[in-house]
Image (cartoon, rainbow, N blue to C red):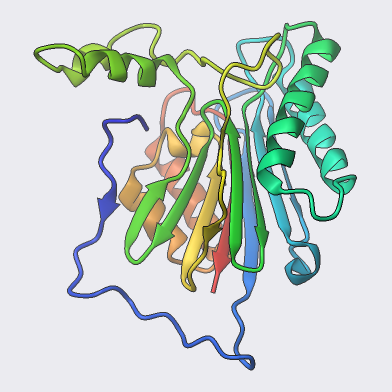
Amino acid sequence: MGLFNDLFRRPASQPPESPTQTPENPPVLRAANLQGIGAREGQEDSFAILGAANPAESGLFALVADGMGGMLDGKAASEWAAECLLQLYQERLPGQPMPEWYYQTVHAVSDSVYQRFGGRSGTTLVSVHIQENRLHWLSAGDSGIFLSRNGGVFQLNREHTCLNRLYLQELEREVIDKRRVEADPDAPRLTSFVGMERLAEVDLSLRPLTLERGDALLLCSDGVSGVLTPPELLEAMALDPEEGCVLLERMVLEKGVPGQDNYTGILIAYR
């Protein structure tokens, strides 16, 4: 999903009302996941969720890593990146600002993947941390982080692909042609990923995003975001996480995409 994709908003006379928040009725976080091989020979995606049982204590931390199939052993790279990130999260100093920690940590993880695989393997990485109603997020590569709110679905991160660079170049032309950009053979190529010799681009939130009751978040590999439309994502994200993950998987499989990539997602509801 590139820069030219419009945000989807379902028509409504007024936004849906959220339940009143009271000390006796505080918001809760619920999370669920989906994962499948698709039409590939093996699973190269990795994911993790920490703190889902008691997010009020230290927050909820989640990640999805999509190993790069065109390189050597993407499965090992995504697993290594996930393990490194989780270990560093558990060692995080109390009170350290999340943006600072995320920025330092993703570079450390990328360096570790590069040293372990010698630049022959890599992985995308998206992660979120939710403490009470404050959301921080991190992204490297083309996996997605989506927020649904008041009948709309919005992608929080920018995908690091040649496609988005080509879109920006196209904006400088006298006549803009989206089809010309999407036909470019280099369009799907990643411009940044964990495991590069020098990590090129990182997206992260410098300030916390305040969650509102009724919000939902979806972290997913491009086996989900590259297949489903914004209205389809919104339909699943409106459900409870367990039901939403079932629907996401069914919709992905019903597409019958030739060579369907591995698909992995984590759906988090703030209700």
